[in-house]
Amino acid sequence: MSGNSRTGGGADARPLSPHLQIYRPAITMTMSIVHRITGAALYFGTLIVIGWLASAASGPAAFDTAQNLLGSFLGRLVLFGYTWALFHHMLGGIRHFIWDTGAMLDKHTASKVAWASLGGSVALTLLAWVIGYAVMG
Figure 1 (tube, rainbow, N blue to C red):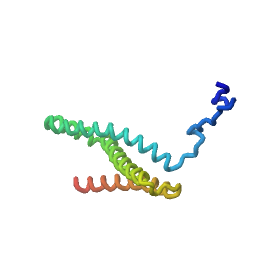
Figure 2: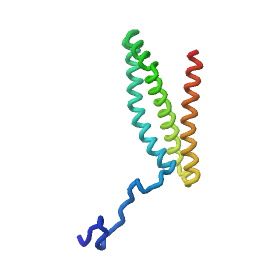
Figure 3: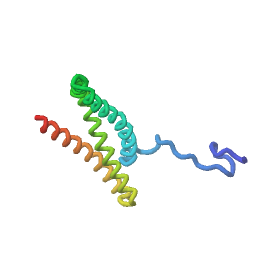
């Protein structure tokens, strides 16, 4: 080998890919990262749902314990975050599906769609919780 591509010497020298730290964060990049994070969070949140369902199948004492845990301030905070992650991930998936069709890929429109998915996830989360509390009485 005549040169080292990492040091820039020789005929086979190629530029290195820039590190993420030199990029200015764009909304599309941020939403892509958050989409991955919410996907992982949904995995763990689904374990909570499974635990809740298992407690319901285990009898009144186990269900009351689960209800008390999930009904606490911390439990409701976790459920609120789970609700937001669910809506955010769903809208991110729809956004990516639209992009997979080749539509809305120009920078300006892609940024608008990314902002819309963020705003939509917050709005849907708040709406779901307002309706939930209204139904509970």
